[in-house]
Image (cartoon, rainbow, N blue to C red; front, side):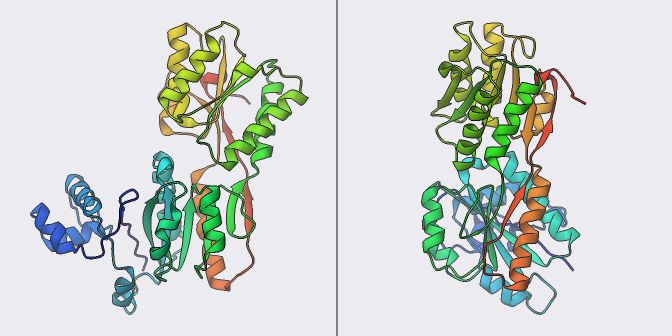
Length: 358
């Protein structure tokens, strides 16, 4: 029997181990049983309304509720419940559709492989993963999957004696298990694509908030463009303080204001895409007739924008499968030497690059 659930934690809030399910139930005027069912991820199965489930999770987050994982393990030890608890620590800056997709695919992968595993999600602030030291050292987790770490977070993980396997997503690590892309090669491949499509000029929009992978991709992209003879003017390469709509809008507005703009843009942050599109529309720059756009990363809504957005991305299903398989392998075989697995990007061509490419 496979049993899985999730607990959603507040962003960088101090934990309060004294908050009980009973207190949450009293605040919401609900039964303890209903609150327990929701917090154990069985709301849908027990036909509890989505509205009620959301209320429970919201109040639990506000009250900084933290489940007693160790006690739950003892209760479940003899009844076929989860044998392993996996902590998924997520940089809150990336709390978006990607996170939801990873979570869903982790659960589906656990089902399909019949892993007896329970996932506990928790947010952390960049450079602040060390604040989770107490939770990580309580020996509650069988293993940890972490996404969005910075160099400071990496130093903490490398220098802490946590005594549990850690799998880092989308960042190559020498001393930790990791799953990533060859980011430099991805940048080179994007430049090669631009060259093959006949582009002579290109530009780049990103953010100062980017991680190591984005920095390496940018380097590979710019260097390969120069090798192919694709012109990239200094004013066509902009990293903004913001990695959101506003950042994309301001950067694209600056690039196209002088009417001297490249024939194709690489948008490194998917959150900036709508901003770049709106800046073009306001200036009368037609996509893809006057300029093509390729984004890194993908959101479902890319297929509903006008024009629809072409992108290079890593399938989240593949990432989740590889992460869980790697962690289970490390646990089953007690592997100590760090394992690094390289995945490969995929491309989706839509209207922003002139439609589908055979």
